[in-house]
Amino acid sequence: MAETESAHSGEAGAPKKSRAGRNLPAAIAVGAALGAMAIGVLLCAPHVWFAVLAVAIPIATHEVTRRLREAGYAIPVVALLIGGQAILWLAWPFGPAGAVGGYAGTVVVCMIWRLVREGLTQQPVNYLRDISATVLLATWIPLFATFSALLIRQDHGGGRVFALIATVVFADIGGYVAGVLFGKHLMVPAISPKKSWEGLGGSLLFGIGASVLSVTFLLDQPPWVGVPLGLLLVITGVLGDLVESQVKRDLGIKDMGTLLPGHGGLMDRIDAMLPSAVAGWIVLTLLA
Image (cartoon, rainbow, N blue to C red; front, side, top):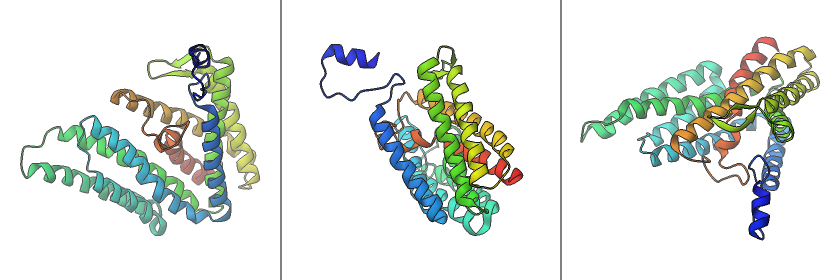
């Protein structure tokens, strides 16, 4: 495949890609570095996770808004970036009510910002399309990411977020390994041509296993709690990846950014984490 084509063309020094299309050494190195940072924060200083999110949210938001603006969308970037910080930091003292209030305020400000900025000089064009994309973006990145911050506020908060991340990461590893080794039956080729049902099986096996171990040894919960948690996180992780894949197809791009070698942009790395943070908060709040 990619390795064979490179070998026959005689391109020396070209980065080697796996069968799944990744620059595997770079992807592993970046993933390991991000994982080590997350483990250190969550286990040693859990509340620093708010600061991590305060940096990650605007980076991911900027990546997507830049791509949308390249495609002709008029996104109120400043209002969206400030609103993302409001959603996150209001969750610290006020919990879910603060996050929802910050989100609602952000949507209102973005609606008015987009209307007034263009409407003062001319008739607004594509207002409904642009605001719909803006509301999606405010939901997709800052609001969903803030659910992991809400987990930090709970008992064993660092362990809860660690269980969330470990489950999604191991599900990704399991899906990658099973897909490369056994993948024959494509799941949704029109959206993601590399995802297979065999890969989904690997994701379920690795993800649920990681979830059961995490809730048992980190959260002192019965192992059965890890089964619905792992199942939901695998499903939301796969769907989150497919959502981003479809958005990129609509925009005609391969990656949202280039920040992380082997992965693309930050958004390309956390696409599965975002909806999984919501699912993880629901399951752990109700069952643990």
